[in-house]
Length: 276
Figure: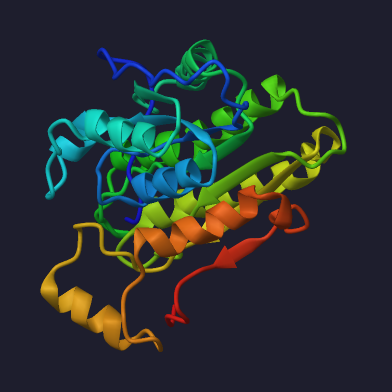
């Protein structure tokens, strides 16, 4: 429940910011699930833009419309503008990740508008609560299509297209996961599959100079918590507060930096010590 979704282009997206011809080349990060300004994906995009990355990001407005928090009108435009003000060229891509051809379309547009992708950050999610007894087959399949299959296809497309110098350790994959299980069966199970897909990439894409890690941000209130849940989760965290998108973004920023090169094939918790 900590991220937002994304996947096939549906409508005109904001134009990328124009960089000065004399500006040095910036690496390009593709971040999925940047649908709302208060989301984790948007926080990561802001941090990487400030650290010198150009940003392609995906979002999927119909998902937000059917969730309790609702869609944020104009979010993609405002986020792109904010990233451009931080010096980043941007490409906002509306996409439905349930489609098996989504990954190809997303990478095609990102490359056409910005260039080859250096870092892939998977921050999208389908997340609708249901348990063992009341989950429908349709809901189960949709969660796995978005959280597991789309993630695999995005990672595969990244691996097929990555053109970094072999052994240089310049490529990055970071996926956001969750340890939700009880009362959240399809979300938790599909996130478990995402973990294994990403950790496999740490080995299978190593020859390309790509690292792959999974980050569990723990409870981050991006609009989905009620007061009772917020209070309970705060009491269960030793540091006495909930996580923020900025907390997650700092870790992702480190993993994507040259200093984070030696961290590979790990499932990292960035949750303030919150009990599972």
